Image 1: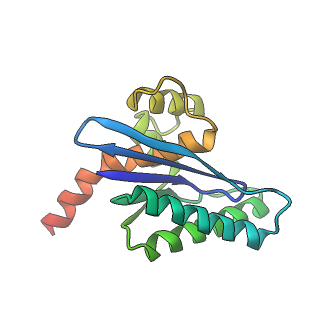
Image 2: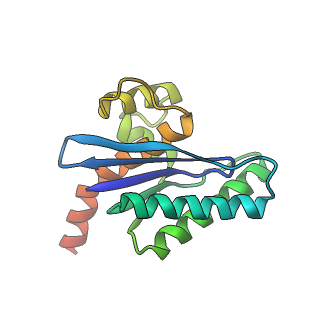
Image 3: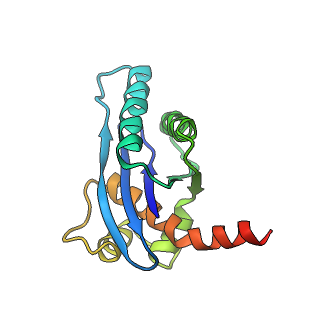
Amino acid sequence: MRVMGIDPGLALMGYGVIESDGNRFRTIDYGVIDTPADMSEPDRLLLLWKELNVLLEKYKPDAVSVEELFFNKNVKTAISIGQARGVILLAVKNCGIPLYEYTPLQAKQAVVGYGRAEKKQIQLMVKTILNLSEIPKPDDAADALAIAITHINNAGMIYRTKNYT
């Protein structure tokens, strides 16, 4: 199974692509889509759309997992992340790829085993699980890999549930 994880953001959108055949993981690629701060918001969203479509076409994931928006005290930040999420959801659905959403709490539990894990703990576990030589940088890429791992860890349960009902 090949999964692309995405950490939504307007300035930096993290992505990570991993494969799994049971308990073994293989990192295909990770990074960020960076939109320049001097671009207008609509142009930044268009850039995210275009770059995300290139990645979806290049890696052809079996599923995409996205971090859900959590409550943010900064309304402006929450709105821009929400807009970026809208671009992600539309691009993925437009490609016909199954889409799954996970909360930060679910990702922490799936990767670290503890829902209140610190960011550094998550990054170290991503490095360990994926057998990487260093912690993925920037943080957005590490978060995207964590969301991909979360889906792979949940995929067996999702499959069994669908076939049971």
